[in-house]
Image (cartoon, rainbow, N blue to C red; front, side, top):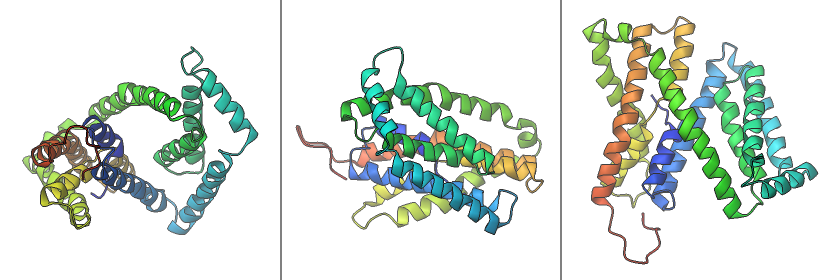
Length: 281
């Protein structure tokens, strides 16, 4: 109930030209906490091991990650990689894209091998990748990120949604009216238990309309819901009908909440003055 799908709300906010504003940076912060926090919680409490052992494993992974982040900007190999990145942005080599995919595969492999959630490895890979590109030109960084976004949002994200749809147990969801009634109930709980605190904890100068927008973006969730319900059903702690209702509600949150949020934001945002910078809240 307390997760946020950062990978979905970020491109939506970007397309709406919100990310370069203080409001957009708040959306990014809300999404980061709402995705990273539950990933850590899953690693600690749903890994099948004792919380103490899980905490030690998580700390070990954090130490390896911190070492990689610290070494990334300083290693001699990093200078060579940056040279290759600078020389191949428009060639068939596409070294930067291949490097990022390699870092992703490596960190996911490490996370899975030590029995952590693969999403934690993917999240960490993004941080390391950003550090590797940190000293290159902003133009080159933008070029690399646009290519990675093309791979992610153009291919991998649609595959995830297709896979989620294929795995959704429609028979269990529609077998009883009471199960189907859980869909709007879970959707409202997402909004109440995740969106509510996000709206209440917004900084004091935030208007009521903007608080509602932040709450709806924060309550948009799906990937962690899929991951947690899968763990629950495989462990026999969650029946398939309830899991299907939770995933279905997550799908509806992705479909409805960002759309409503953008409508509210568009109706309440002040008109930009000609030539003014996009720094208004």
